[in-house]
Image (cartoon, rainbow, N blue to C red; front, side, top):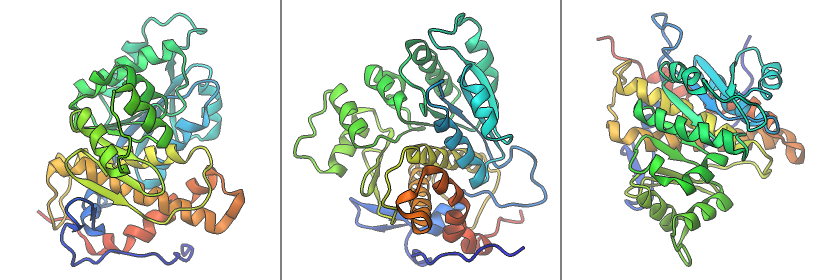
Length: 344
């Protein structure tokens, strides 16, 4: 059955340099981003296109980790896990049979807490990237486990995206990710301001780009995605500005869809760095995190645009989720037909 008609979109010239734009504010071209996407062949095995996990989800916020994991699957990750609080698991399981739900987290009310780390550690060993914080809530026991998990992810050298309540943890304990180039933070405006205040940064009279760079440098070169009217992506040295058109609705859950896209591209980046596939052009390994973050911003914003085009004021994040695959096709389908993996 033929796919639905793809809506018009603006592409970037294939003949542009790897990074187009001014040195202070650049945009990677689509052809560069496409190098991170695994080519689909009959030689693939389950997991070759990425195994990711969303660490979060309490009894109050069950939709957030679902949006993370479901976005990853819709983009093409092979396996998506959710590691959530015990009481949240049955609800999340009811949303989709495609997501592997692990009820390993324990809130203060759900004693005992023994054995949690022993359950989570073997799962982390299987993964290529982890999303942390979506739907986590503020329970101290959950935060204690997530602190351990962030350290465990870092010890394994896995890339991770941190959003929502995990940013509160970082405000209290920035050493957890300081200097870790595999970390991506995705704060919205209030979260960004709170994090800067917690870290003692005075961003008064600073532009959004300057403030984002200050935060990235303060944390030792992690990648910061400051979400807003445009998304500013920076590791303190290089700045990308994603001004892809998005929808006009600001419904809850959009940040979780972004996290799902980021964790997917980070996982693909790990596979790319391992030599799992090669395209025509090579990407420097140190550029992968920034490129993954930009690609995720572009796709999530475009999916939002498509959903709003269909639903208008009634747009919900579930509508945006339904447009993720169309957004991917609009941006990358033609390129992936032209960019073939090496035969060697």
